[in-house]
Length: 250
Image (tube, rainbow, N blue to C red):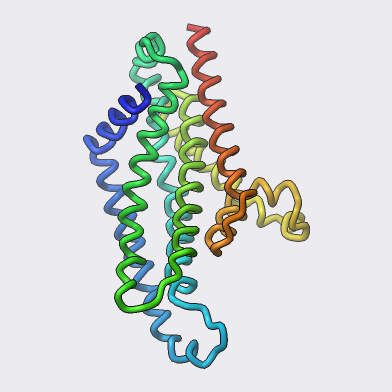
């Protein structure tokens, strides 16, 4: 049943112009960033040849591209998550959904995985950019894989938080703004002076950006992966509890 709901959500995304517009806009912006960073790399390539242990195209082009993608999608994911549940409330179809012979967990996970399938499509399109450099240069595939994994985990974390925020209101715009505010806060936690001064502080550990940056550098640390998994699970559980409370109240 989870897969059925996920397919329905993915189909409904592509039946509206929003998903197509987002795919197009994201690809255009990231393609522009990719060629800009590639141009900068070519301009300093002669200087890099004189340096020992000089950074390569993976460090100077591909990793920054993934960084730009994470910031761009932090602003876009709330637009995708805002209608997942709040639209059901606004259209008064949430009662029908809650009374259907499926569990709340299946409903939440189905909507969540529908969005994850869309994110996978987006990441597959994004991965074509760095892979296009393979015939002409040496790529660090381990670092590329780690960066893509980090990007997938951080986007999945964005989605789980957005799904929960969508379950709190019947206004999609409020859900989008709330999600963006929450994600921006969690992204910028490590920029505080106290967090920067103390590497193991609570604020540093809670920051999404800190864990994503580690994976972007090619460091596959179980601590970072565990953080994302706990983050995703926590917000999915919160969304399930929120809908269960609404079912009991109705």
